[in-house]
Length: 53
Image (tube, rainbow, N blue to C red; front, side, top):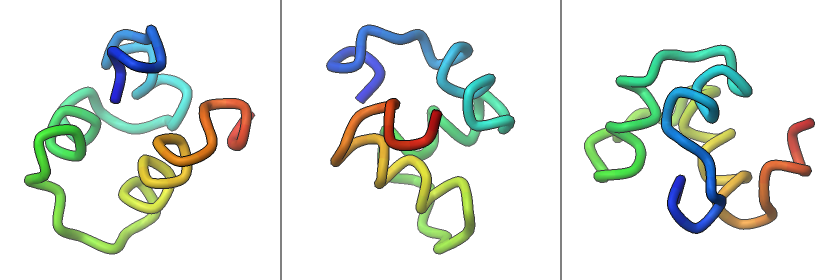
């Protein structure tokens, strides 16, 4: 996802106020939680980062 958005994992993590590890896990599908970070990653993937800024 970060490649398609042209953002680094660190930048996306900063935008979401979460860890790089959470972003990395979400990108590779390890993040199975339905928590806020997972929902934000889904939203950003579908609508772009502008949806949460």
